[in-house]
Picture 1 (cartoon, one colour):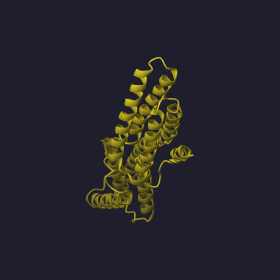
Picture 2 (picture 1 turned 180 degrees about the vertical axis):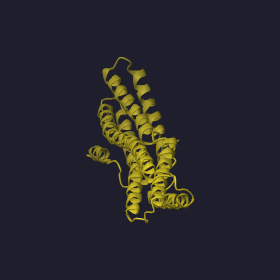
Picture 3 (picture 1 turned 45 degrees about the horizontal axis):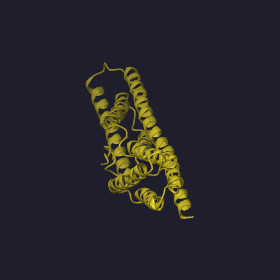
Picture 4 (picture 1 turned 30 degrees about the vertical axis):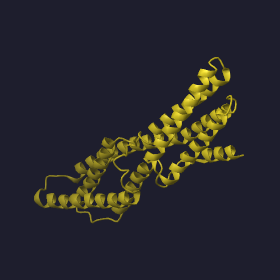
Length: 259
């Protein structure tokens, strides 16, 4: 059963809005705390606080780069998985034509159904139902492979078909792991957002401590950071958002099956 990440339950536009509001509140809270400290104490120096703010900014950049790298690697893995799986399905489809009797036609019909369901889940996003259907088709395909193996245990053709079918099921398991259950850990997301909030609060604190008026550039910083965070979340999502994996390899395969 699919395991959703901590951010997958919310649309990206909502996450973007909440992130902007939270970061702005962090800046404002830090600014007011800095102004309060300035009235209460003359011993805290702005230069020292600025050095600490710069350090936390570097820490934020480090955590953000690490998280973005994980999400981008997963995105590239999904792209490659589509091509690999399409090739494995096509190989199985071609070798199924060499099976004796009517087994080849039956297997090919199931493979066409498999490709259709594979594309349908991308369109509708019903991952749980698609996984159940794929598992049912795998069981039916393996029943045919077992029957062919028992009837002709020494057949090279049957052995090649079983090999390609095994590769296809392996790629399915890998695709589920990469695209559905292999997201950025929730602990890392929590750490990233916490560091971002603390960093923006430190920026506001320094501004309040040195009596700097609220600059519009703070909004630029908040908006830019929020956009990068949402871009990272978009990369990490299986089939949502602006950055989606092209299914052209599967579409071309469906067209070839129809020829």
